[in-house]
Length: 140
Image: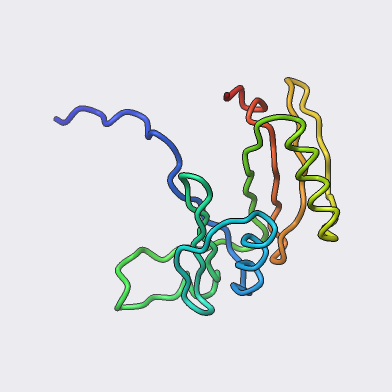
């Protein structure tokens, strides 16, 4: 019997879903400065965020079977959630100012009981997007 591999080192990629891939790409590129690594018109857009990847899939397309693509089908219905890491409260303030300067509505600004702060907005597909201090999870 093989030994357990142990816990993973980190999350390599996370996925959210948006029917309008062009709008999602523009949002994450222009608002957050993420670099587009790969895209396929109407199907997906992959963006780099530090050492991780944010994958944005068209839910209808990602659930469709395609004999040319061996990757398992997946998808979600309704809005998802992703949280971007901020180092401190000053950075949260800068993100809040940026969102407002771009005309993005702040859905919620939250101070956590254990310490740290988050600010929430929505992307064009309705996904809940949070920027939070890493200390909300007691991370450096």
